[in-house]
Image 1 (cartoon, rainbow, N blue to C red):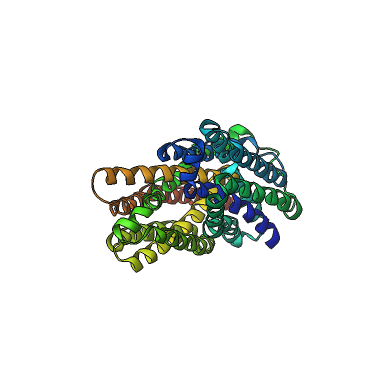
Image 2: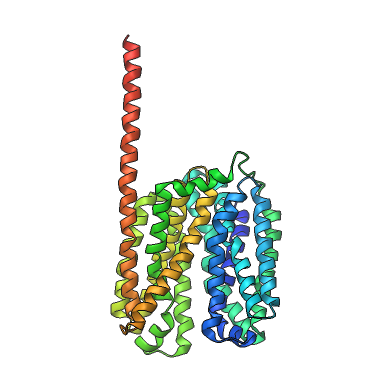
Length: 402
């Protein structure tokens, strides 16, 4: 089980590296394909759009396939996408390559989460899923800085060749170490997509899009917060991002344990803590030690929330668990867009670089609204189930008496 989950986590490491290294080599990409930096930024959006589109479609179409073969196929598609990125001759082909690379992202995490959960006892599933997502967290600490350094030293294309190598290693590791696992032979596309009609699934997605958007309101503008608010040098920005990455590693492990302990209450708790921490960063970010500590703790809470959202979607999606797990990454990429957009609005409005953290705190609190609706529905469902059980019990008693 340990080596199988490690093989799955290696894929998460590769996915996380390619997703975030673009931000580190963006000026090099802009120069390399002959566009300005804002235009080059659309390369990031193209990948995110691929994740949003690919996760539900691929998960619905592939639910019947054997899961080990599906994982290898998804990672092969990811390998091809990064190869096309490294070979892209111009800006437009680069945009297409990044969109194609993002397509298997969410589906891979969805399938890998299901496979990891199937390898352990029910009360350990949260920890197994968090171990897969730990690969993504570790990529922020190791993979992204290393690939960024390579990209800046040997040219931006070398960063994506590195990810291509990681993808090839993942394919080999999955085929060699992950046990064979059948798909759902009875699955249909209509049945899988039917999960999107479930109120609890939609509400949980909304929690992720809105609540997690608060994290990206801060993260998207962390560089000017470091330099303009805290008064630190540009060279300090990577150190702050390193603190964020370390928080992600801690929070991912913690999230798995919280999910196994009390999933719904952990969702509520992490959202509340996240809102408080974002507000604290807004207040204390001019003081450098507080900024480092606040960014680390925000990352811990955010990563715990991401794991809990993954487990909640798998729980509420019914038989379409793979789709539920994959949709989490679509939701988080939409949260990225939402948080960055709201943060940009308040900066453009002249409210300064501390304002996005305030917006982030508001988004985290707003995420509690769909969660509260979900709690009400959950309680009503339990009451109806108990009423039906009582009615069946009463009818059985009358039969016995008669």
